[in-house]
Length: 178
Image 1 (cartoon, rainbow, N blue to C red):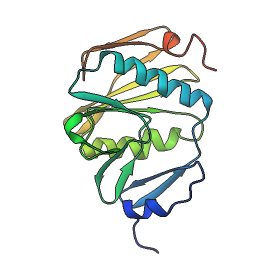
Image 2 (image 1 turned 90 degrees about the horizontal axis):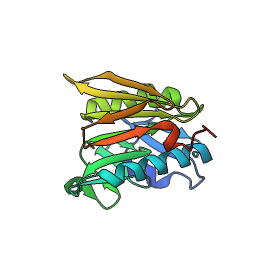
Image 3 (image 1 turned 30 degrees about the horizontal axis):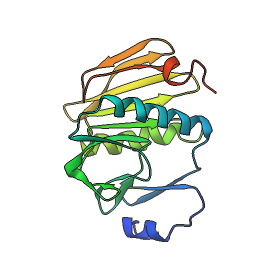
């Protein structure tokens, strides 16, 4: 068995469009996101950016979260403190991470990445499924994620954390999941 991967090893991964991420030294490779995935992450990122306070920043790739030398994740959308952003790297737990799921990412996003964000101490973890459409909202309670909300289609989701925002999936996704 080979040695665990480090963030330095990611520099040598092929530039083939795939997404390369590390969790505790284990390499995860995902296909590039499709059109629906891209549209959902950009629209949600823009919605969050509209109400984000100045001391926080809404980021999407190429920005990564790198809490250690053996873990680097590339969230679809993240909200981080300005002070934690160094170049394209967030070195501490973001306030919010959003992953957009599709057929190729569901297992990783709902298991491996969710557990990694939980261990990092990310207070708010959202999983957006544009195909349904649905939004799963997890909140960190006593170092473990609890499902705080599950909203579908035209049902609004309103929160004050990490800042006030209102999400209506049919409005966000244009009324259809395509």
